[in-house]
Image (cartoon, rainbow, N blue to C red; front, side):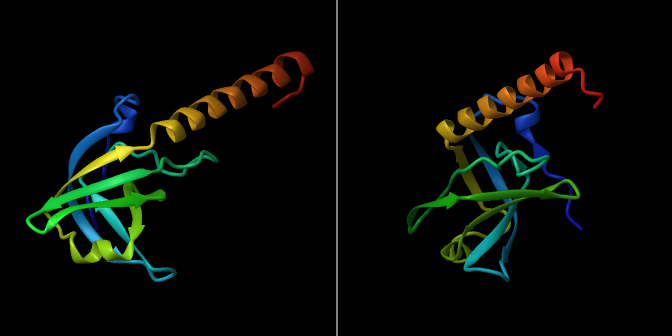
Length: 132
């Protein structure tokens, strides 16, 4: 069992980039990607009907800089898992320092859609008289 991921998005939702440490890299069984667990994250996972953040994980090593898209993020038992392409397995190891960068346009859209959904729910409850 791994320690819970420090979810920085709960402390400051405006953070779009940060440096973190790789805890675990595991090959996915259902596709060509890998699951990466980090000590902390700024990526919001898919949860409560809300879509996850997307963005890029960057690792700089002697052999060069690698940019890996993160297209799925999920949370299970307090551990946040980031999904990236398979080639990441060759450059990422526990203890590797990496940089996370969120796709700001996706985060902003998801935030606005979430807020709009909350407003619609409140309107239906208050105007429609529905007992929720």
